[in-house]
Image (cartoon, rainbow, N blue to C red; front, side, top):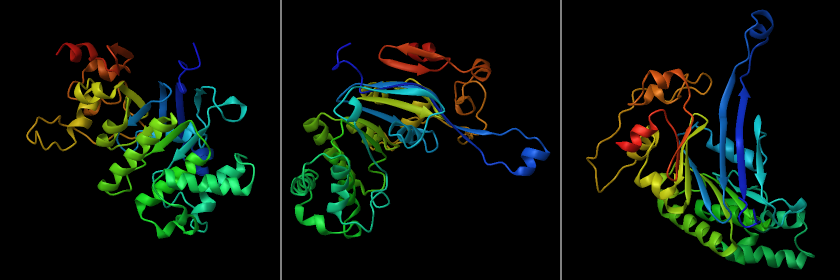
Length: 326
């Protein structure tokens, strides 16, 4: 496999379990076993260079935990992340993250110029202070701000402008791979489109690869090449973006898409959901979606489904073939 054909990131059997706090009495006296939150429970995917891979799902499905593991903020319980060779130190593909809340992720005591210049200095990307300042001003221009903004503090900007600052800070490290964790969820709808367009332009200009985490399906459709749908820590369906949105296979994917308002078809049929999202502490046996699934059978309750390939779609459902033929 040539360097260009090698995926920017290949994730293999990734899991991340968190132990629940347990009192001394329960542990030492009553001997109760420790319980684990299975935030991510064995997922695999690959992201080709220069593309956008999105992970979607309800809150609590584990998608943000995946983002944190990719950038090294959280260690996986098992599994491996394999990055392609890149320009970074030790030949590793250099990775940066754009966080959900652009205000909380920026140091309120630092001026914007210092926030953006810090990665440049720490990584030794410029030879002297003058070059660092020139690079910092150029990044402000790149994200639609100006050099005059370098002397201002984060609280002096709007939410959309703060997210532009966060993007400039990420770009300062000269990354090839960006993890975007809900980058527009804290912004107004009109500003969301501006940030998404900026990310698309940067990808085209700089050849960036994105892992895009979101519950905003409209945003995901706008930016993604391939989409993975997560439910209770597992990927239940993965396909090209057009396949996911035009021909969803898994009942959960159909439910997610059916929950989005559609002005063209306001009276379309909705898939009923019997119960709320189960707890990741004690997920249902078998297929974890079976308590909410209209197609659930005894087979679904007995064991977890294996991955099936239907054209360009990978789906985990015992009734995948029936869905495909229906």
